[in-house]
Structure formats: structure tokens, C-alpha cells
Amino acid sequence: MDFSAGIFLQVLMDGVVLGFMYALIALGYTMVYGVLEFINFAHSEIFVIGAFVGAEILLGLESSGALATLHPAFVILVLLFAGMAVSGLAAMGLERVAYRPLRGAPRLVPLISAIGASFFLQDFVRLVESLWRNTFYLTYPTLDILEKNLSLGMGVEVPLKSFLVIATALAMLLGLYLFVNKTKLGTAIRAVAQDPDAAALMGIPVDRIISLTFFVGGAMGGAAGVLFGLHYSLINPYSGFGPGLKAFTAAVLGGIGNIPGAVLGGLVLGLMEALAASYLGILTDGAFGAEYKDVFAFAVLILILIFRPKGLLGEKVREEGA
Image: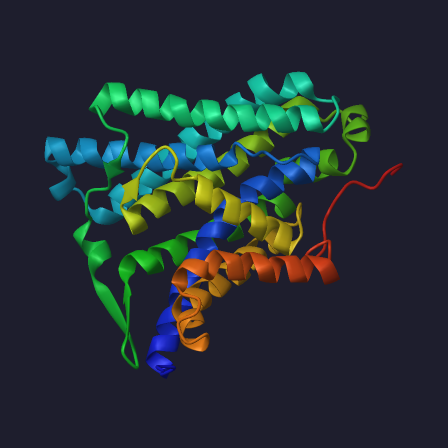
């Protein structure tokens, strides 16, 4: 039974990396729910689009020979910005086509539309990649610098790509916080989230602000998709289902509609999953292995929601009659 400090710290680092990945995806659910009180179940496919954009750019650079000559930091920035831009625009298009015509309809209607959009985007990505590359399973080319390990002491070796995920996630979360709380557009988003009718009377273009919210949420998902591809290498059109479901769980765990809650929920879920995968088999003497990590994580979620239904930091919704 190995509970040494080195192994434990390694597990914690893996959990933090996974948690920040979930947090970035969860922000897309949270942004949309905070404004429309609606769950965008096609957000996991927006995440996948970002992953494929990053893969196509990397594969193009590799085939042209430019990948070996460009600075890795420049390449990573190009991948992130391209993934964010394309995923953000895809999310805006999704809102315009699948959700805006249904605004004001019973909540079940846009939910069904979101599920249909999710299946459509999965098969659309599969069709495009099949026609373009004759395969829809892509492997990210390796950036050598990201494969190097950094020693933290006590036998803990962490690849630089893990630090890339953490650093990028922290920078984007800080940027999102400043955008939402310190800019006029952020103020407009919060006004629409609070009371869209009153915001419209004050001259705020509600439809544009909702589109902007989808863009921001989609951009977060696109960045997470690129980081996912760089970290785990293999992607396919269905790669978003698992992380998307976990990110939605993280958003609910932290408090749906609550941006800090999405971050906290992602970290809690990532740590629980990493700890369960590493120690569940040891603690149960082999009765339950790493394959039960999802069961453990969702069981803890159920227990938390039984005693605190609005999540760890509370659910943020509109005040009726405000």
C-alpha cells in the first residue's frame, strides 16, 4: 500500500490539471445559463471543434516543415487563438440557428434542440474530417518541449504540458473575471443576466449580448479543446462527450450560473477523480478499481446536492420581479 508523499503529490497534480480542464469547459455552461437559464448541451461539441482546429493547424505546420522552425510558444498561441475564435464563432452560429428562434418557448423545447444540435455537430465534424483526411481519429503532432518533465522534488515529475494547462487556465479565468466585472460589455452581460427586459429598456442590445455570451463561452471551450489535444494527443468527434458531461457536473457541483463555482466544481471533481483512480483499488483491496472513478465522483456529487442542492457556492439565477 503506497501512500508515499511523492505518489500522493503526483496524484494531486494530475487532479489539478484535470480539474482546470473541466473548469474551462464548465464556464461555457455557466455563462449561457447565467444569461438564459438554459443548459447548452451542445457545448461539448464546441469543445471538440476547438480540438480539431488545433490538430489541423499542427498537422498542416508539420506537413509543410514549418513546425520545426517556429518557436513552440508562438505555435501554442496560434493554436489557442485559432481554437478560441472558431469555437466562439461556432457557438454564436449555434445560438442564432438553434436557440434564438426558440427563445420564450417552454424550457424543454430548446433543450431538445440542444441535444439535436449536439448530434448534428458530432456527425458534421466526422463528415468533414472523413472527406478531408479519410479518417476522423486524429493525433496531435508532438511538441518536444511539452514532453519535457519538471521535477518538483520527492520523486514528482510533471510534464510541461501539465503546467501549460494550469497556466493557460489561470490566465483565461483571470481574463474572464476582469472582462465580466471590469468592462462595459461585462456589465451589459450581467445586466442581461439580471433582467433582459430592463436591460433592453436601458438601450442594451440584448440579442448581441447573448451572442457575445455564447462567443465567450465557446471560446473557453475551444481553448480547453486545444489543451485537451495537446495533453492527451488522440481526439475524435466524440471526444467531447465524457469531458462535457464531467464539466456540466462540475458546473452543477459548484453552483450553476456561478463563475467561481464552475472553477471550484471543476477542481473538486478533477481531484476526486484522480484520487479515486489511484487509491480506490487500494482502499477496497481490489474490489473496486480505477474504472469506478466516475461512479465515485458522481456518488459524491449526489451526496453534496442532497445536502446543498444549489451547489457549493450557490446557484445564480435571475431575481423574479426585479
